[in-house]
Image (cartoon, rainbow, N blue to C red; front, side, top):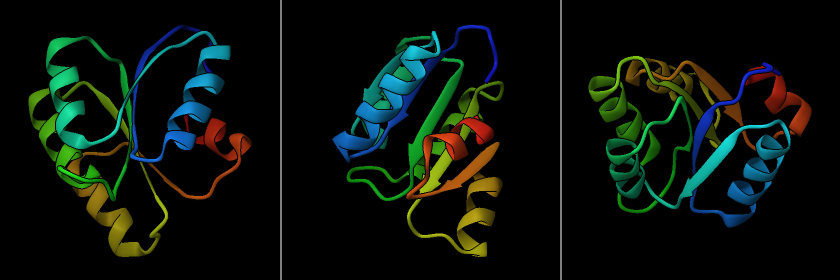
Length: 117
């Protein structure tokens, strides 16, 4: 894990995931915010500075791949990690094409997450 503090937005419609990651990253010294869908996340990033976005793929209102595309276009220096329970080559390729820097398959352990982060 990097030693500097980041502002991180965690986007997932599953509260257990956002709470788990926000708590874990908070203990690492990072400032975390959460959103339950891509539309809200896009608004939050437009109004606040974030260094990193972690997003699920399947969510209501706007999915994570669409969010990643929009964020990559509007904020090209923003680092994005995509997480998904639907892992295959196409999912990974879609995330990378959209602009994701990292991809992690759900479910994951905190050790696996830390290695990707």
